[in-house]
Image 1 (cartoon, rainbow, N blue to C red):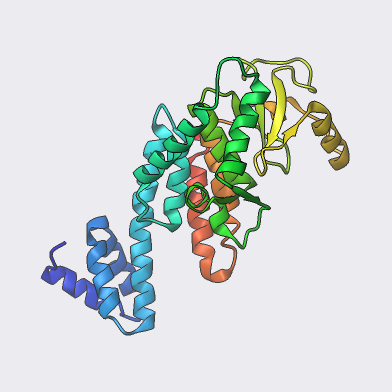
Image 2 (cartoon, rainbow, N blue to C red):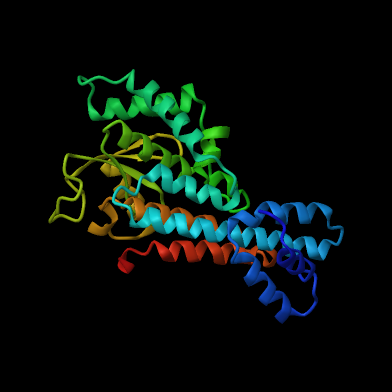
Length: 293
């Protein structure tokens, strides 16, 4: 953006110690939109005062976040609500310059490699095993336990790039690929776990029995691709002393999956200096509340 006299005057006031003045100035700068970011980046480079640099960084962050809010709203209101697109939007919170088209292409290459190994004679279990084998053995994706001190492990973009993710990001990635391959995998709502289930042709079919749900054939651990049976899940419920409920076995919508990802990702920013990031992310999660529709 061309540097006008008004912009120069506003930039000179960024360092003003009066909070009220700074609040007015920052709102005016943000009103220019993302086109002003290059000007702010240059200002940061030529500024030696650390306190002023921090204010400039927050202004740049606020501008990126405002754009991300708009994109999330558009995604949430779209008919498709593509899961990969939603997951990459979450990645852009921390990496705003991320070029998402690149990762769509990378995922398509992975999808094609799996598709070449599939055929109509394979059982549902065999199809899932083919996908898991290619992901975890051929591509060497490494699943890690959930650790809130490692925020990158929650990001699908990092999983694609570094072949490393936790149970949430790897599970979401498997669901993304399964949709592209017409494999009936859905994330479900089992407490304290991030489990994927293989459904029959009607995942939303109501079922009178709480457990085992007849519309689910088996379960998959997104962390490793390991297959679980109904008996395994029953053992888990007995261990945590929770009675199985129908709601645990309903497929989560793409919007709810992304909301869950954001909520878990927000836990990575709990210290005082990064509290604003946690608040940002929780506000994004709030935007995705399905009852707001």
